[in-house]
Length: 391
Image (tube, rainbow, N blue to C red; front, side, top):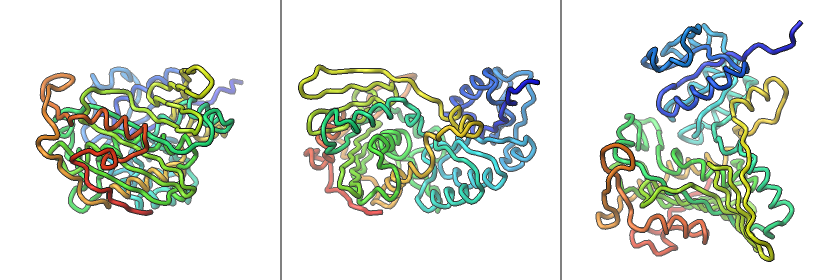
């Protein structure tokens, strides 16, 4: 008799936008016989063309997430929907005993995050948060370098992300670039959504990812676009043991680059380009050492956890410090509009349209990661004194 486990039935909530990546990943794991796509939850069903990879297979589609879970008997749900819907959908899945891969950010405010984590725990289901960088084998490699003192005592962490987004990016959905929709928190800012990995990865590298690891948070939030949320910002988290973790990011870069995290030691530094799984070690008495590491997919890891007890890579408690940052951004004063002479427009990097470019921002973002400084401390003429909030 065969001992091969049956494919795990999975429902995907949110299959367009970034959800297309999840759809392709589910197809990959389905071809390996690990999982089976049992249903898709979308307000408008996917067309035959969009589902070409799954043609000829039984597949339910519904806008009613709970009813879809009930009808399919799904064991796992992948939730890739607007930020403000995450908590309600996660709790609906948990109430049915369905395990979760929940896209980042896990919630739009800390209260919803706590409600979600409490609900998941009470239901006895497993939840993985979609910080894909946590699956990089470089994370454990960097931690081992730190543990063995490769760059000496760690004195701080700096992260930088310089991306470009055109005006159409903020027209892709009603919640794009919003801090709230009516009374509902959204918090779709650069620190909390598109470059959230920079924040979470910086904290994860040094094992300071829990909510209780945070002693204080300073934010500087700005916007070049005509939006509610921030598109050019920095934050400094001070941990309970006094370690500064500084992150500077923008969607208005002069030239798009790969985001990275720097571990500053008193005898060298470690740079981790987290989307590339690439690590560079620079230290006294040694030549530079560079390595590219593998990566474990988070959905695959979740399935392995359920089947074999494999350690979960991105459990909710390791994203609590990140959610403290989300809460600090949410409760901070409205992002400051940059003066007209601080930015200019240029052609979109792809297709038609225009994008906004903040003058000198690439250098500022890099300088922040290098020096663990906020924009105001680097002398940016448009930067206001930092707003300070504590958890």
